[in-house]
Image 1: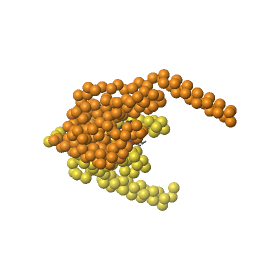
Image 2: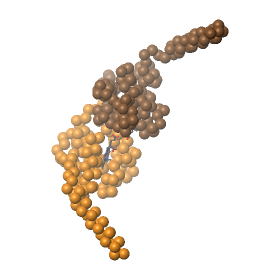
Image 3: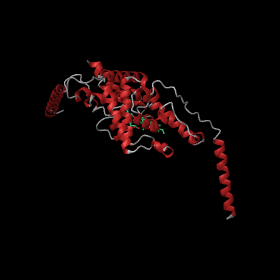
Image 4: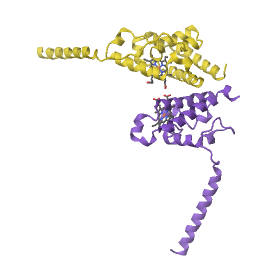
Length: 144
Length: 158
């Protein structure tokens, strides 16, 4: 390799690493998507990493602001969830717990083509427990 | 001409036979119970004028107090009814209302209001045979307001 080319590659690598390094600082450390979207300093709820992973794998694709499915987006939008009034938040969280309990989501038709998106038994328990407990924690009498 | 008529008669005959045969396929109707201590209307402090709307428009599919008129004993209508009542009760059974925890109650109130607002409920085939369940705009408004109000009170712990 010519010295010239080698220098160019080296510069490129250095600049790229620098950029990545700086970019890392703009991301709040260890913060999940849900928290980032909340405007208040203290989020209404926290989605632990393991729950977030399940949601991202099995649900988020259809239930986000950019989803093509109007119906799925209208019924539940994970991007908007943290910005809802607490009353509505409770309703949505309870709905999540219920559809997971009944095995209604992800839709069966969808799972035929994408079996890897199915919830495992432990995913179900985790998501249902989180949704149901978070809903309860948002009730005003519970917070004090 | 005569030949055509004979074919038609034959067809009618076989349809009749089929109709009789399908009557022997059992359609197990979800059972009816009049004793529901946790019933929605009974425990959620409804004014009578609102209660009657829910009873007429929703209770045949969403409670244990399903009324089965004569035609629901005739296949294939009976099959459809069995499916709707089973499905309806599974989604929301107003007879079990007071056994739901509070977050579930809030969800049911919210969804019922949504369904009534959008006109998705009552389920349309039902309306053909149930003129009383055809809700006017004003009746829908009354139901939705009552549900929303109940939800707000419940949420704030009143």
